[in-house]
Image (cartoon, rainbow, N blue to C red):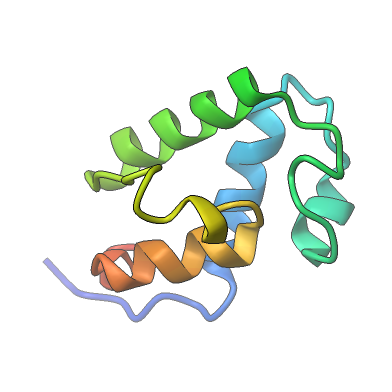
Length: 93
């Protein structure tokens, strides 16, 4: 099995894609990827956010503690940073 280094934006892009999917296409992909707004500011419901967290946990095999990191998970960048702290960056791509 050959190990590939993940591209710089690959985890960021995947989290953004999953956010749009979790919102049933209700979020604009370009705005989510740009990261200038929180998911709530973009109109993501709390149910869609929980679906996003569930998708990330299932895809990357990580547990995301919503209470511990509540203040940092509101953007793609915050989720990526949290997941990288859990060692996900080595498996992304």
